[in-house]
Length: 194
Image (tube, one colour):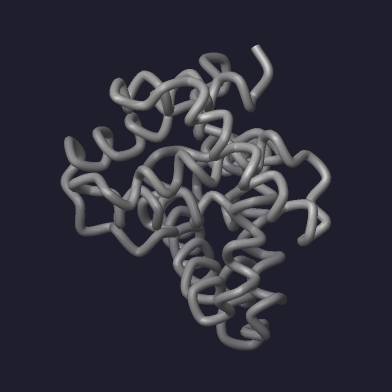
């Protein structure tokens, strides 16, 4: 099913009082705004923006939006729920709360899950939107990047004697090393990866 349709179906299922024609009107309004910004896949971005606006209104909406934004710094090939939560700066959550929040993003078709790799990932257009949201807030972007780096520094230290574990997380480790460069913290953090 196309991503825009998946997100629209989810959105309408959580807004039973919204008529389909009203929803289409909102999507069309978003598309017009996106045309001004020069966004290529306007239907996906429009449905996703409406879905994120709805998240803001929910009980744990701020935390879910924070997790959404943090997908923009996680490895494109996939990441664990723990990596996402720590990257978002929500590492103090217990395992149940972590699973609930990440699971809710999955149920909303924002996150996908690969059973073979046991990793979450996001559609490239969803990732692009997360990255765009972070571009507007360099402090938040750097906060997420540093959290992601520290997460993998700790992982590398804890699994230094297990090649299999390091290989399993090679994409996240690589992403973290790239982020060390982006943060201009080569001298402070990079030696810890070696």
